[in-house]
Length: 252
Ligand code: NI
Image (tube, rainbow, N blue to C red; front, side):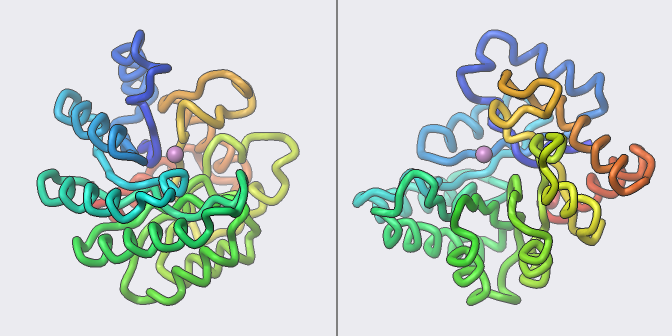
């Protein structure tokens, strides 16, 4: 099993990271994509990946970073990519949840990272919140040049299929286990299985039984078992197929 989106470098894990990693191993979670989203977290993901071979680091600039200094941040990211081996660009994308006053900067920061993903031939990890149509419009301009994942996807099945057509995988996390998550369950049930990934986005978005508590990478097994139940497949098959998908996308 692979957690394709984890932030185990966060302070929430500073006291028990080793235990978190052993819980992963005992649950069969043997690879973790460690996702950076700012200058400091890109560095943290890289440092931890040197220490623990379970981790595969990425580097990106979250839409929260889209202030007037966004161009400098792109240069910092590019320097980082020259000096370090990462497995994806991101997370990056558009987030209109907290307001729309920096939309233009968000779009520019996002496009710059799409171009880095193409330049470095790396997959793109896309964060999309309350910004489906703008995200789709930007990504569709790069159709055929880009591969990646819509991380912690929470949109409709119809749009999920459109992102699949653009060359993207759909990654589901803890929210698919929530009782009222009808649309996520519809996505989990109907999306082509060869395009499905699983993730935690820990420490955020814990699955239903731990809702509101700290999430951790080993809980990705709850996401996989929910998907197995919804698709009437064995857990082992979901594990096998989503792991193969992740290995193919990230080259891990
Ligand atoms: Ni994240």
